[in-house]
Image (tube, rainbow, N blue to C red; front, side, top):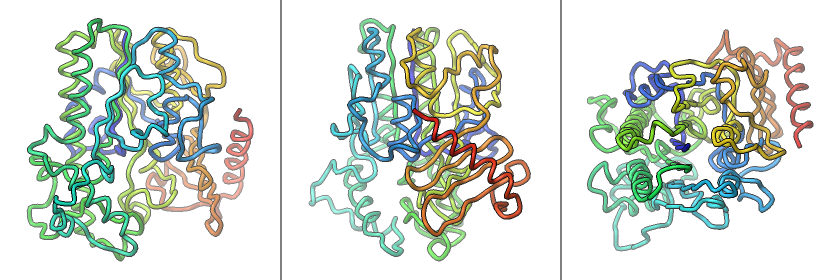
Length: 433
């Protein structure tokens, strides 16, 4: 009985073939979906990167209570819960926000491997490595861009030794996970947590992925780390499309290496006894609502709606699509349920295994999510209401069936529906313990 958790950070659900995309190549994840339970209405509860990991590791809603912070000493965390039951666990990650010991995300793991160097991770600091030329050719200044420029300078130093795609971050995480598996004398009763920062920016996939989707006639620069904020006035339509195409290339790069890892695990015979969970922490805005990247707490579908694919070794739910509303809170109890470990008290999430077995149709009527102290959202499969907590910004209401792109704010036209959803959202938050 084993569990392998695979996370690709900042992965849009609508960029996978198994979720309806028809222009980005993701054959390996599509194949995984065909063998798995695929959840069509999964949402990220607390955003962005670190709050979502807190949700994964605690099974609790975070958005009303805590934002970007360390795990608290009083938190009951997944790896420690498994450790108490004699289950070996390992985490291999290049998410440099998890590297700092003060964040405490390594708690309970028997083994952790931190792959350094992504984004602005201060790993290689040799000033003799001149990266100014690379920065100038991949960076378009705009407004207060000092932080992004500094991140790019650090990033180019960190990857200055790369020779091929085997050196990319997603490849090194997958290879690190496989190497850990091969070192285990007893390949049973383990949880392997593979947490990849890709396809997070910088969006600089190597060949052949860089050229997969870009327009061969494009004459502009590769803006691999755009300034977060309004796209209008900063990016031309051609530059914006090129950025989207570079991101798509990185999605295909991730698909290749996740597929490689799963193929190798299959050759070891481990898939016969292993629950595989694939998901992300959130999506990525590309000007759908005027912004590039996670520049403001707009809890729209392109950010909050995420993929969730679960392959059960006994084929439970294989090839099935599930339309129930589920959230990142479900990961914690699902893993414990698979291992036969009792879920601790005060856990908000619920195991997905009964649903996969056909024993229940849904877990809840609504999905709830938010940015701490900035915005909250409640949605079902028809309506989405956003409570904007920042001063000067109004609330928003969208009909997802008539307006899936959330472009027509109905807050004035449907006041009763907005009031109904806001009341439900506030009651839910007030009832959390």
